[in-house]
Image 1 (cartoon, rainbow, N blue to C red):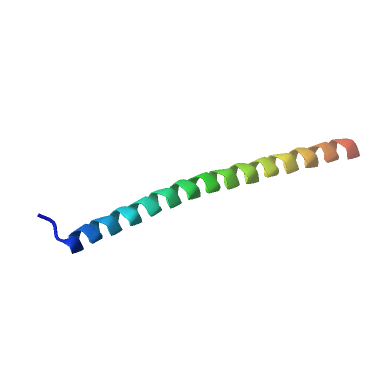
Image 2 (image 1 turned 90 degrees about the horizontal axis):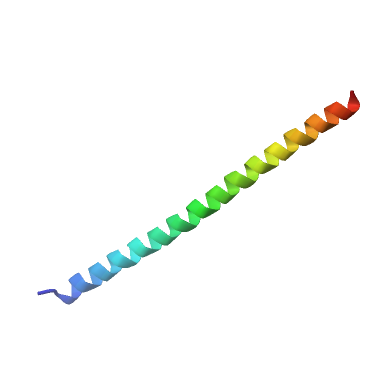
Length: 57
């Protein structure tokens, strides 16, 4: 049926696949958090600049 080396190869494949899945899951979460935070900061800066221009007029 299966030899021991094939079994180890299959386990290695599953391990790499699982590590890749969780790494992708982590990176997608991290990148979306980063983009959302950067966008929010940019919006806050534009609002502050607009308020400052309104006050100086």
